[in-house]
Structures are given as C-alpha cells and as structure tokens.
Image 1 (cartoon, rainbow, N blue to C red):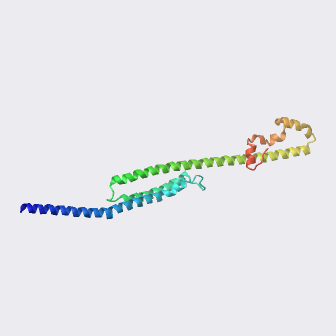
Image 2: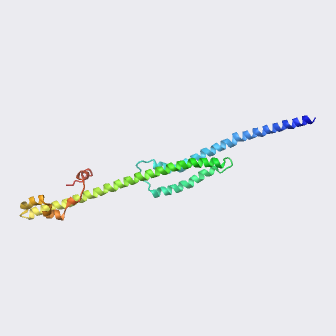
Image 3: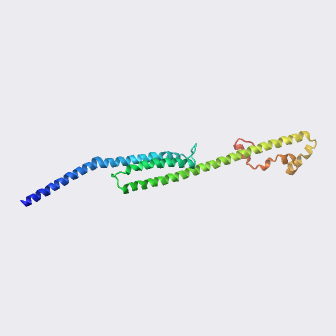
Length: 206
C-alpha cells in the first residue's frame, strides 16, 4: 500500500511538472519570445530613425547648404535624447543586463562610424570653403589688376594727347619701367595673377 501511495505521488509530481512545463513553453512561445522579438525590431527601428538625420546628411558628398561642426553638435544632442528613449525598451525583465550591454556595444560601433562620417563630411566642407575663398581672392585680384591696367592705359592715352615728346620717350617707357610715370602711378604688374586663370573667370587682364 505504501508503495502504491509513493508511486501515485511520483506520477502526480511528474504530471504536474509536465503541466507546468507545457504552460511555461506556451507562455514562452506565444508571449515572451514574440514580445522579445518585437522589442528588438522596434528598438532597432527606433535607433535607425534617430540616427537617420545625421547619416543622411553625411551621405551627401556635395551638400548645399552644408552643416557646420556646431550644427552637428546640436543634431547629436537631439539624437542622444532619442537614443536613450530607444534603449529604454530593454529595461524589462524580458532581457538580461548582458543582452542590453550587447545591444549598446553594437550601437557604440555604429556611433563611432557616424563620428568618422561627420569628420569626413566637415573636412570636405572645409576644403570646399577654402577653394571658394581662394577662387574669390583670385577674382578680386583679377578685377583689381584690370581696374589698375585701365587707369594705366588712360594715363598713357592722356600723355600721348598732351605730351609733345611722348613719341620720343615711348621706347624708354617700354624698355625701362622705372621711367614710365604712368606705371609708377598705376603699376598693374605688381598684382601677380595668372592671366589665363582670369580669362577662364571671364575677366580679361594684360
């Protein structure tokens, strides 16, 4: 009799364990696992959305208008706030701290790449700005040389019309710049620019 009671209790215990196991499996496959997958997908989507504004901007090779370093700092502040909201999805008993750490590790890798892209972007912008300033400086020099040269030509024209000895002295003017009074007053030659570059800019210089 005692043996039968022990057997019945053992069988009942096994049955209860199987029931609890089945309930546990049901809860895991029909609630916990789908919920975990939903949080993973939703978090990744949230992260992608948060990083999208900066990633889209850095993907532009010739941005116009462009972002400055200060502009990116403001964008990063907004992104950081959004990123913390995304990662808060893992603050649940459905995930262990180590699982959240793995996600943060992957996120940090993406953030490092983003920082590298921002650095490349700002260098391209700085290079373009330097080229633009150089081009503007050349244009200014070309216009200045053209303006001074026009004044020089007017001066020479006045001398030809008003100086009876002009034709006797023109050769010495040409051979020796120091004897040319107009060149002393309007020395366009000291403005050192490439005539071909000026011509390509639509400015004709001597």
